[in-house]
Length: 313
Image 1 (cartoon, helix red, strand yellow):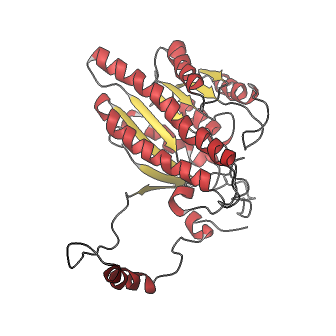
Image 2: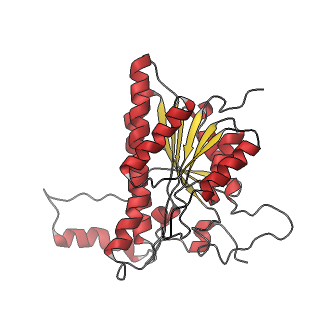
Image 3: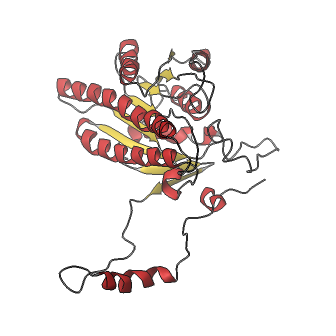
């Protein structure tokens, strides 16, 4: 019996732990050969020495289960190392079919306290990292499609966050990077559709090293049930988006956690005002717009628990 991803080659970045590990195992379980990328630094802020251990352990876990996997220790925010990652997949498996961008770091601080380096480092790893791998994967798929004259199977799954959708007061760098990833995804989807490539983004809710503070107050089931925030709830959607079954899913943003997938609509106009004359005056804008907000809550962002749809323990 064939599997959905039989004969395909995949890259998963940041796959040494947490969400990336679950995604790499899922793709391998669906038949894909996997390049497990992780820089292996012990600190979630990107601190510490790089290590091959996390990526090697996941690759070995895949091989022990009968799959194919190789490890890659590299920093995807470095353009050359990202190129080497894509080339490793091509050299090892003859091609690349699936790219899952997951690597990231956290350097949280309020906007008035954040340093330039804290801003730049998070933008670099998340947003530049997504761009770097996408750039080389896109060039590979475009060349293959031009050579054959036919579309190829190419799938990109990017990792955004609800920090972009709902805001996160202490994460201006992270929220901005995740918003940028959505823009990168929709642009990529339009550019590569002609070659048979799709690009989608997910906003996962998962309890990992990156989110241990965010979800510290949410209950973990003690009766043997799978945690609603387990990364294993997210991985199946990544497997689906990577497959031929999702050929018509392109340029989309999906929220996923504990048995739920929500497809997010693009922004819609909530209200529209027209000027009485050629252009607005200050007074006219005040008369039109101010009443619109008078009866609305001062902050319409949902409380964290409501956004997450979770109960605190």
